[in-house]
Length: 249
Image 1 (cartoon, helix red, strand yellow):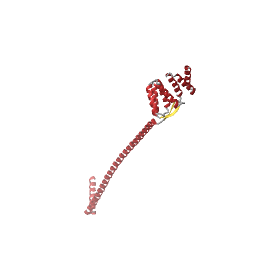
Image 2 (cartoon, rainbow, N blue to C red):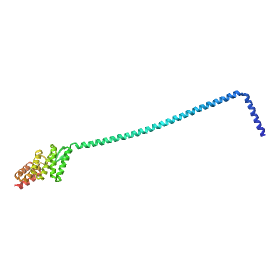
Image 3 (tube, rainbow, N blue to C red):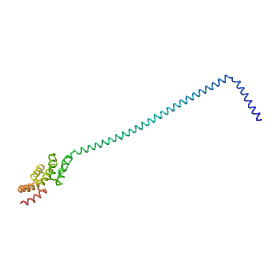
Image 4 (cartoon, rainbow, N blue to C red):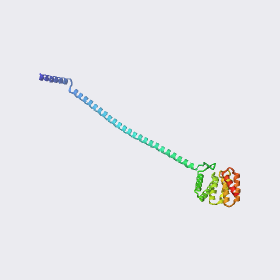
């Protein structure tokens, strides 16, 4: 039965082939094959075209990606340059501030300032203040000759200084310590004439009397002490002058 069925199917296919051969001639078969080949070729060409376009698209995408990476690198570089520029500007501003502060400090060293000394206020340059204080420090160390030179030089350099009355007083004291009594009296008198209301004026007058006593001129010393008591009666120097007057009589 199985063999019979197989033969029957084969016979049926043979009849179908013969029928198709009858329906389509050789020319038509060839045309169909050619049409099919043309369609296949067209499809292959279309496929190749699409493949080429895809390849071109991939290359374009790759180029675009590379350009993007280049732009990113340039942008990062520009950002780095911008940050460096910001740091440079900050450094310049900081240096300018430091220079400005340094300049202000240097200028301040030359600017006059208000000084208070012996109850008097006046304006003096930093140089005046420095030189006067240096001379006074020398006197306080007992270096009387050096102090005499320092105060003498100061008065010559700053003849109109607010420190001049005090400089005359301390110069006289340095000379008194050096036993230069006549020179000391000249400077004490110069102080009294220059600033009779100065805090050191009564002391200067008392110092003149001391110089006169050292020079054995008791008469002149007595006269000076009397003038001291009369001119500056409320001063401490006048109190000392009264005591010495009592001893001189």
